[in-house]
Length: 89
Image (cartoon, helix red, strand yellow):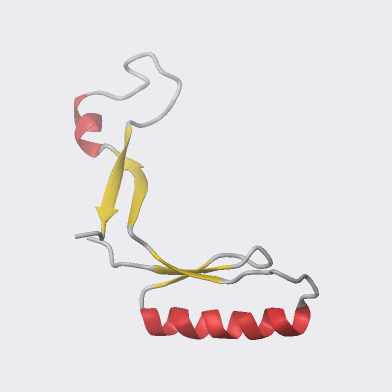
């Protein structure tokens, strides 16, 4: 199971991912200061988001033990599936 993540986001910069709230909060505050000093666009926003759910695209190793997509006539190399993490409960 993956850990919950926090994301700091602003349209002016890249996304930043954190495994703990304290580091995310520090980046959030630092980013606000940076944007205040460097940005001249009013209404610019900075977001601190807590992940609720995410999905990771992974190889379906169980299905690969049975057959490959090439053996089934497809033009891709592996079967895939989504692994989901849900932090709502």
